[in-house]
Length: 389
Image 1 (cartoon, rainbow, N blue to C red):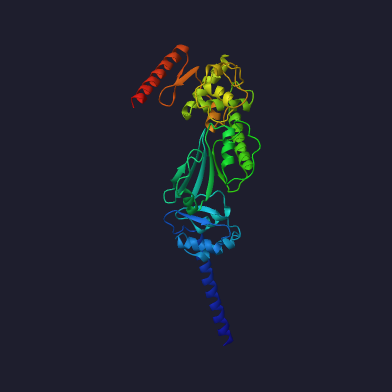
Image 2 (tube, rainbow, N blue to C red):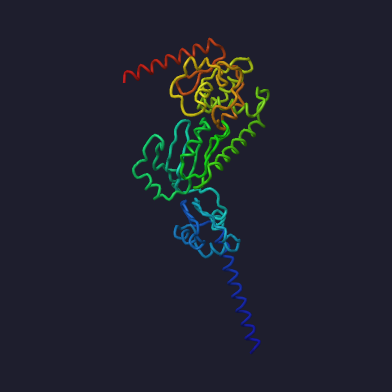
């Protein structure tokens, strides 16, 4: 009898163990298999949230099949205590394993609403936008110039309602360091006092995700590091025979190219003009350097250059001095830096606006004068049409 009891008990235990092993194997497959989500969603994780709350949110949004398996998998992989707050874009079909990795790895928020602080060449813009997770496209909800315009009605309430995920600062190519610092000082979500304006040209025009309360000096240091990396990489891959002794001289040339054209495809051509002029011993004769000498990079000139300014003995007056000015005249972007260090091979010595937003290039003064005459005719026609209106 005892033999039968023992045999039955062992049989039952084997059945139970096999069943448990089957459940464990099924749970593992569920954890790493494609999830049930058919359309991308935003998952917001606030500071202090637990894996229980997050798993409940994911289950309610149809992103996971089991909150228990989700939490158990996080615990088994020792990630249950590493939850990072933020707003995450959960892609269709994401596995539980993928989601756990995403919300414990952290990094910049990839979903939700953003306040965009755009620092232009002479202006600023504050915009609120929100990502549509289904399309992956941001929808602009509101925008205004915080310096020139009053805050739109309901803007603050809309910002509060959207529970902002990111603050993003975007620098436009060609803004001066003084203008950038003035803008950063006006942003009350930042902290810290900037005592000195960074060296001209040292700030990389690009997009920066900023934490609320971040120190302005830390953000400026990030911008400087980014620009140094761009310049050093471009310098290491520069063309041979360029008339620069240092990367800083190349940065100065890049800033001139940046101010002369906003057409990306033209930048290598514009750079070739100035390099050709230097190699022939000709003066650069570029208005943006003269303007910088007049304004010291502080604001817009707001008028045309005077003849006295074009004749003035200034280190930035390239109608008077030979070669490059002593410093950059703005913060050039990556494309302008690369153009200055890998210019097109041309024999161009002149260029003038062509009426399309770009420029007409010429190798001889006669060709240039003809291009100038065409541009003057376009200007005259536009003035006539404006007067007629």
